[in-house]
Image (cartoon, rainbow, N blue to C red):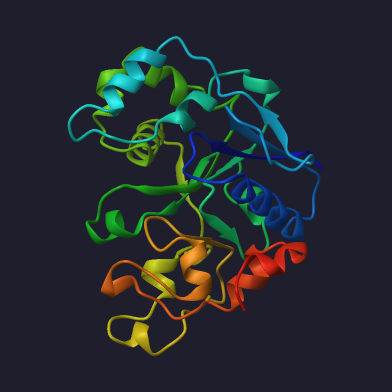
Amino acid sequence: MSVANIVCIKWGDKFPPYYVNRLYAGVKRNINRPFRFICFTENSDGIRDEVEVHPLPVVPFEEDMVTAMTTGKRRGAWRKVTMMKPGEVGLEGPTLVMDLDVVVSGPMDGFFDHAPGKICMGRDWLERRRRRVGGHGSVYRFDPGKHDFLYTEFADDVETSVAYKGEQRYISLTAHKYKQLEYFPDGWICSFKRQGIPVLPLNFLIEPRLPQACRVMCFHGDPKMEEAIIGAGTKLRYKTRPAKWLRELWLDHDEQDWMPS
Protein backbone atom coordinates (compact mmCIF):
# COMPACT_ATOMS: atom_id res chain seq x y z
CA MET A 1 0.00 0.00 0.00
CA SER A 2 1.44 3.36 -1.03
CA VAL A 3 2.07 6.08 1.53
CA ALA A 4 -0.74 8.62 1.82
CA ASN A 5 0.24 12.28 1.89
CA ILE A 6 -1.65 14.67 4.16
CA VAL A 7 -0.66 18.34 3.90
CA CYS A 8 -1.62 21.44 5.85
CA ILE A 9 -0.38 25.02 5.84
CA LYS A 10 0.09 27.20 8.91
CA TRP A 11 0.74 30.75 7.80
CA GLY A 12 0.80 33.69 10.19
CA ASP A 13 -0.59 33.58 13.71
CA LYS A 14 -4.30 32.96 13.07
CA PHE A 15 -4.02 29.33 14.21
CA PRO A 16 -1.89 28.22 17.20
CA PRO A 17 0.34 25.15 16.77
CA TYR A 18 -2.10 22.89 18.61
CA TYR A 19 -4.37 23.11 15.55
CA VAL A 20 -1.66 21.26 13.60
CA ASN A 21 -1.06 18.79 16.42
CA ARG A 22 -4.73 17.89 16.82
CA LEU A 23 -5.26 17.53 13.09
CA TYR A 24 -2.36 15.09 13.03
CA ALA A 25 -3.82 13.17 15.98
CA GLY A 26 -7.24 12.98 14.31
CA VAL A 27 -5.73 11.63 11.09
CA LYS A 28 -3.62 9.07 12.95
CA ARG A 29 -6.65 7.70 14.83
CA ASN A 30 -8.70 7.30 11.66
CA ILE A 31 -6.37 6.05 8.93
CA ASN A 32 -5.36 2.45 8.26
CA ARG A 33 -2.41 2.94 5.94
CA PRO A 34 1.05 4.46 6.26
CA PHE A 35 0.94 8.22 5.91
CA ARG A 36 3.18 11.23 5.65
CA PHE A 37 1.86 14.30 7.51
CA ILE A 38 3.40 17.54 6.29
CA CYS A 39 2.99 21.09 7.54
CA PHE A 40 4.28 24.07 5.58
CA THR A 41 4.91 26.99 7.92
CA GLU A 42 7.24 29.88 8.67
CA ASN A 43 7.13 29.06 12.41
CA SER A 44 7.45 25.48 13.66
CA ASP A 45 7.40 26.33 17.38
CA GLY A 46 5.09 24.03 19.34
CA ILE A 47 4.41 21.56 16.50
CA ARG A 48 4.75 17.93 17.58
CA ASP A 49 7.77 15.93 16.44
CA GLU A 50 5.72 13.44 14.37
CA VAL A 51 4.78 16.21 11.93
CA GLU A 52 7.13 16.75 9.00
CA VAL A 53 7.69 20.51 8.94
CA HIS A 54 8.87 22.46 5.91
CA PRO A 55 9.23 26.19 5.17
CA LEU A 56 6.56 27.86 3.06
CA PRO A 57 7.37 27.17 -0.60
CA VAL A 58 9.42 29.79 -2.38
CA VAL A 59 7.73 30.81 -5.63
CA PRO A 60 8.82 33.32 -8.29
CA PHE A 61 5.47 35.08 -8.24
CA GLU A 62 5.38 35.73 -4.48
CA GLU A 63 5.21 39.53 -4.76
CA ASP A 64 2.57 39.48 -7.49
CA MET A 65 0.51 36.95 -5.54
CA VAL A 66 0.54 38.95 -2.31
CA THR A 67 -0.33 42.15 -4.18
CA ALA A 68 -3.16 40.52 -6.09
CA MET A 69 -4.72 38.81 -3.11
CA THR A 70 -4.74 41.95 -0.96
CA THR A 71 -6.22 44.31 -3.54
CA GLY A 72 -9.84 45.45 -3.46
CA LYS A 73 -12.34 42.63 -3.02
CA ARG A 74 -10.01 39.88 -4.19
CA ARG A 75 -8.69 38.97 -0.79
CA GLY A 76 -7.85 35.41 0.09
CA ALA A 77 -5.15 33.02 1.21
CA TRP A 78 -3.59 31.55 -1.93
CA ARG A 79 -0.81 29.68 -0.13
CA LYS A 80 -2.25 26.28 -1.07
CA VAL A 81 -1.41 26.92 -4.71
CA THR A 82 2.27 27.48 -3.85
CA MET A 83 2.39 24.06 -2.21
CA MET A 84 1.35 22.48 -5.54
CA LYS A 85 4.65 23.43 -7.15
CA PRO A 86 5.94 20.30 -8.95
CA GLY A 87 8.58 18.46 -6.93
CA GLU A 88 7.87 20.35 -3.70
CA VAL A 89 9.42 18.38 -0.77
CA GLY A 90 9.33 15.25 -2.91
CA LEU A 91 5.54 14.92 -2.86
CA GLU A 92 4.39 12.01 -5.02
CA GLY A 93 1.04 10.33 -5.44
CA PRO A 94 -2.38 11.16 -3.98
CA THR A 95 -2.12 14.12 -1.62
CA LEU A 96 -4.90 15.25 0.70
CA VAL A 97 -4.81 18.95 1.57
CA MET A 98 -6.61 19.87 4.79
CA ASP A 99 -7.36 23.23 6.37
CA LEU A 100 -6.45 23.59 10.03
CA ASP A 101 -9.99 24.47 11.10
CA VAL A 102 -11.36 20.98 10.42
CA VAL A 103 -11.88 18.02 12.73
CA VAL A 104 -11.49 14.39 11.64
CA SER A 105 -14.61 12.49 12.71
CA GLY A 106 -14.52 9.27 10.69
CA PRO A 107 -12.49 6.92 8.44
CA MET A 108 -9.92 8.64 6.24
CA ASP A 109 -8.91 5.88 3.82
CA GLY A 110 -11.81 6.55 1.46
CA PHE A 111 -10.43 10.00 0.70
CA PHE A 112 -7.53 8.26 -1.05
CA ASP A 113 -9.52 5.47 -2.72
CA HIS A 114 -12.42 7.46 -4.18
CA ALA A 115 -12.20 8.34 -7.91
CA PRO A 116 -8.50 7.49 -8.28
CA GLY A 117 -6.51 9.80 -10.51
CA LYS A 118 -8.96 12.68 -10.20
CA ILE A 119 -8.94 15.94 -8.25
CA CYS A 120 -11.54 15.38 -5.55
CA MET A 121 -13.33 17.93 -3.38
CA GLY A 122 -16.43 18.04 -1.24
CA ARG A 123 -19.38 19.69 -2.99
CA ASP A 124 -19.54 23.33 -1.94
CA TRP A 125 -22.84 24.08 -0.21
CA LEU A 126 -23.44 27.49 -1.78
CA GLU A 127 -22.34 26.47 -5.27
CA ARG A 128 -24.71 23.50 -5.17
CA ARG A 129 -27.58 25.85 -4.30
CA ARG A 130 -26.59 28.10 -7.20
CA ARG A 131 -26.33 25.04 -9.50
CA ARG A 132 -22.76 25.90 -10.38
CA VAL A 133 -19.56 23.88 -10.54
CA GLY A 134 -17.72 24.19 -7.27
CA GLY A 135 -15.94 22.23 -4.58
CA HIS A 136 -15.19 23.25 -1.02
CA GLY A 137 -11.52 23.91 -0.33
CA SER A 138 -11.31 22.72 3.28
CA VAL A 139 -10.42 19.18 2.17
CA TYR A 140 -9.34 18.19 -1.32
CA ARG A 141 -7.11 15.62 -3.02
CA PHE A 142 -4.78 16.02 -5.95
CA ASP A 143 -1.69 14.30 -7.36
CA PRO A 144 1.31 16.62 -7.88
CA GLY A 145 2.60 14.47 -10.74
CA LYS A 146 -0.70 14.41 -12.64
CA HIS A 147 -2.23 17.77 -11.81
CA ASP A 148 0.69 20.17 -12.17
CA PHE A 149 -1.59 22.48 -14.19
CA LEU A 150 -3.10 23.70 -10.90
CA TYR A 151 0.24 25.37 -10.21
CA THR A 152 1.41 26.27 -13.71
CA GLU A 153 -1.82 28.00 -14.76
CA PHE A 154 -1.71 30.14 -11.63
CA ALA A 155 1.99 30.93 -12.06
CA ASP A 156 1.54 31.88 -15.71
CA ASP A 157 -1.14 34.50 -14.96
CA VAL A 158 -1.45 35.39 -11.28
CA GLU A 159 -3.75 38.36 -11.86
CA THR A 160 -6.33 36.39 -13.84
CA SER A 161 -6.12 33.41 -11.47
CA VAL A 162 -6.76 35.54 -8.39
CA ALA A 163 -9.75 37.08 -10.19
CA TYR A 164 -11.55 33.76 -9.68
CA LYS A 165 -12.32 35.37 -6.28
CA GLY A 166 -11.33 32.47 -4.13
CA GLU A 167 -8.77 29.73 -3.95
CA GLN A 168 -11.38 26.98 -3.94
CA ARG A 169 -13.11 28.42 -7.02
CA TYR A 170 -9.81 28.56 -8.84
CA ILE A 171 -9.03 24.92 -8.00
CA SER A 172 -12.59 23.77 -8.79
CA LEU A 173 -12.91 25.55 -12.12
CA THR A 174 -9.40 24.74 -13.29
CA ALA A 175 -9.88 21.05 -12.45
CA HIS A 176 -13.26 21.13 -14.23
CA LYS A 177 -11.68 22.71 -17.32
CA TYR A 178 -9.24 19.80 -17.53
CA LYS A 179 -12.08 17.30 -16.88
CA GLN A 180 -10.38 16.18 -13.69
CA LEU A 181 -12.92 17.31 -11.07
CA GLU A 182 -14.84 14.76 -9.00
CA TYR A 183 -16.74 15.24 -5.76
CA PHE A 184 -16.35 13.17 -2.63
CA PRO A 185 -19.58 11.38 -1.64
CA ASP A 186 -22.23 13.57 -0.03
CA GLY A 187 -22.03 13.55 3.73
CA TRP A 188 -18.32 12.83 4.09
CA ILE A 189 -17.41 16.50 4.53
CA CYS A 190 -19.77 18.59 6.64
CA SER A 191 -20.10 22.20 7.70
CA PHE A 192 -20.56 22.74 11.43
CA LYS A 193 -22.50 25.96 11.03
CA ARG A 194 -24.68 24.60 8.20
CA GLN A 195 -25.18 20.95 9.14
CA GLY A 196 -24.23 20.80 12.81
CA ILE A 197 -25.98 23.79 14.40
CA PRO A 198 -29.83 23.60 14.51
CA VAL A 199 -31.69 26.45 12.85
CA LEU A 200 -32.55 29.58 14.81
CA PRO A 201 -34.05 29.58 17.47
CA LEU A 202 -33.50 25.84 18.07
CA ASN A 203 -29.74 26.42 18.21
CA PHE A 204 -30.33 27.91 21.69
CA LEU A 205 -32.11 24.76 22.87
CA ILE A 206 -30.68 21.74 21.04
CA GLU A 207 -27.09 20.55 21.05
CA PRO A 208 -25.29 20.59 17.70
CA ARG A 209 -25.21 17.24 15.94
CA LEU A 210 -22.53 15.21 14.25
CA PRO A 211 -24.07 13.71 11.08
CA GLN A 212 -23.64 9.94 11.00
CA ALA A 213 -21.75 9.80 7.69
CA CYS A 214 -19.48 12.75 8.48
CA ARG A 215 -15.76 12.03 8.19
CA VAL A 216 -14.48 15.60 8.41
CA MET A 217 -16.33 18.46 10.10
CA CYS A 218 -15.38 21.92 8.81
CA PHE A 219 -15.40 24.93 11.11
CA HIS A 220 -15.07 27.53 8.35
CA GLY A 221 -15.89 31.05 9.48
CA ASP A 222 -17.32 31.18 13.00
CA PRO A 223 -17.64 29.51 15.40
CA LYS A 224 -14.28 27.78 15.54
CA MET A 225 -13.64 24.69 17.63
CA GLU A 226 -12.87 26.62 20.82
CA GLU A 227 -16.28 28.31 20.75
CA ALA A 228 -18.19 25.23 19.62
CA ILE A 229 -16.77 23.04 22.36
CA ILE A 230 -18.02 25.29 25.15
CA GLY A 231 -21.08 26.74 23.42
CA ALA A 232 -20.49 30.22 22.00
CA GLY A 233 -20.70 32.25 18.82
CA THR A 234 -20.79 35.86 17.67
CA LYS A 235 -23.89 35.74 15.44
CA LEU A 236 -27.36 34.76 16.68
CA ARG A 237 -27.76 32.26 13.85
CA TYR A 238 -24.52 30.50 14.73
CA LYS A 239 -24.61 30.59 18.51
CA THR A 240 -24.42 27.03 19.71
CA ARG A 241 -24.93 24.80 22.68
CA PRO A 242 -21.73 22.96 23.70
CA ALA A 243 -20.75 20.27 21.19
CA LYS A 244 -19.85 17.55 23.69
CA TRP A 245 -18.73 15.12 20.99
CA LEU A 246 -16.06 17.59 19.95
CA ARG A 247 -14.09 17.00 23.16
CA GLU A 248 -13.37 13.41 22.17
CA LEU A 249 -12.67 14.19 18.52
CA TRP A 250 -10.52 17.30 18.81
CA LEU A 251 -8.87 17.53 22.23
CA ASP A 252 -5.78 15.42 22.77
CA HIS A 253 -6.35 13.01 25.61
CA ASP A 254 -3.45 14.52 27.55
CA GLU A 255 -4.93 18.01 27.11
CA GLN A 256 -8.36 17.48 28.64
CA ASP A 257 -7.60 20.18 31.21
CA TRP A 258 -7.12 22.72 28.40
CA MET A 259 -10.84 23.44 28.33
CA PRO A 260 -13.13 24.27 31.26
CA SER A 261 -15.46 21.50 32.39
